[in-house]
Length: 80
Image 1 (cartoon, rainbow, N blue to C red):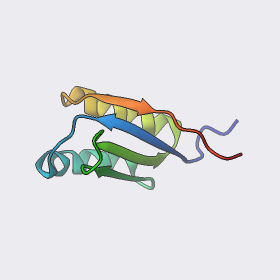
Image 2 (image 1 turned 180 degrees about the vertical axis):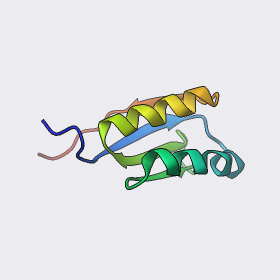
Image 3 (image 1 turned 90 degrees about the vertical axis):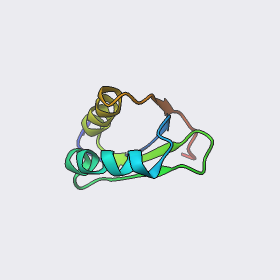
C-alpha cells in the first residue's frame, strides 16, 4: 500500500476565527506543502478539509493540538 498517495480528510475543530486561521497558515502551508487545506467556519463543526497523505494528516493533527485546538476526524461514507 502506498502511504504517499493523497486522500481527503475532514476534521471537526474549535478553530473559530479568521485570526486563528491566519496564525496557523504558515505552519499548515509548511506541513501540507503540495496538499490542500481549508477551514469552513460557517459549518457548525468549524471543519478543516485536508487533502494530503496519511503522515501529513498526523502532523496536522499534532500541530493543532500543540497550538491548543481540538481536532477530531470526521468519518464519512464514500461511493465505491
